[in-house]
Length: 110
Image 1 (tube, rainbow, N blue to C red):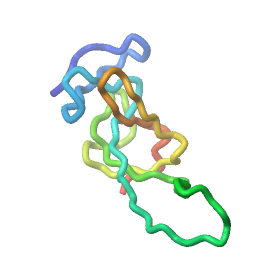
Image 2 (image 1 turned 90 degrees about the vertical axis):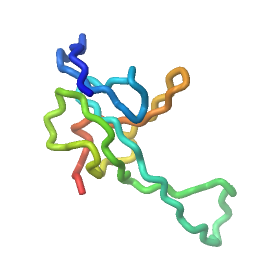
Image 3 (image 1 turned 45 degrees about the vertical axis):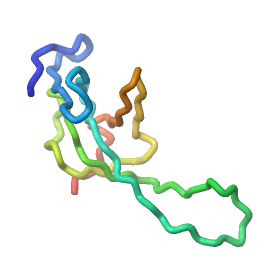
C-alpha cells in the first residue's frame, strides 16, 4: 500500500510497512528490516567469561520488509541483505519495536 506523503527532510515519498502497523513509514533512504536470530552452540572456554557473554558476528543478515521511496539501491521486499552489525538501528517507540538500516550501509543482497 503506497502512501503519498512527502518527507519534510528529503522530499521523498514513503511506504507503509504492513507487517509492523499501518501508521509506520520509512523515509529518508531507510530500509525496514527483520534480522535473523542465530542460535550458536555454547562452547566450553578455558578463559573465564560471564555466563551471558555471546560473541557477536561483525556482519548481520536481514530480510527487507519495506523501503523508503527515495532509496536508490536495487532492493525489493523479501531480499536478504548483509551489513555491518554496528549499522543496525533498533527503534522502540511507544509499543512499536522495529529495525532499520540506512541504504548506503547495505553491502550486498543474497
